Image 1 (cartoon, one colour):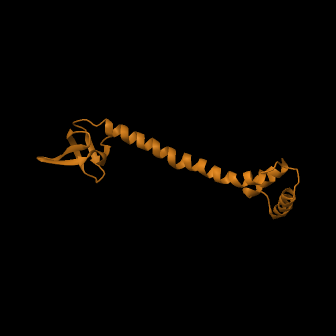
Image 2 (cartoon, rainbow, N blue to C red):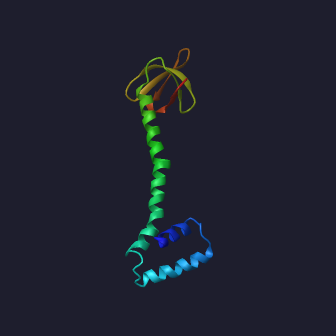
Image 3 (cartoon, rainbow, N blue to C red):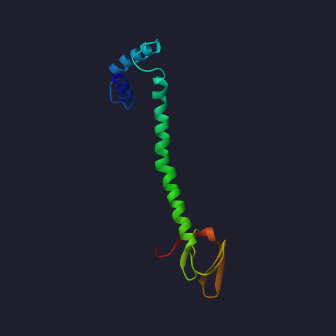
Length: 126
């Protein structure tokens, strides 16, 4: 158990160079057939930082992105006639008509523009 602690502590830089030299000797002894730790321990110890990196990336990148996609999809599904919206290009307008993939916005008197439904960035006021 002490060997496991030493190895993890060294990985995080918690223990100085003197112990690193001792740990190197212990690692060589283990590789020569010492029965202090189970076989395959060194491969597992070398693999855990990679596995930890994937777990951290999941919680930092993938999961928030999925939540943001869900919120955007629900916003696009809740569009209705009369909503004031902002497009991804920064154009403000009011929805006058829409179908499955197109939205018609009134941006000025007698001026209507047709946009892709996915080009709506947000509903104004939300």
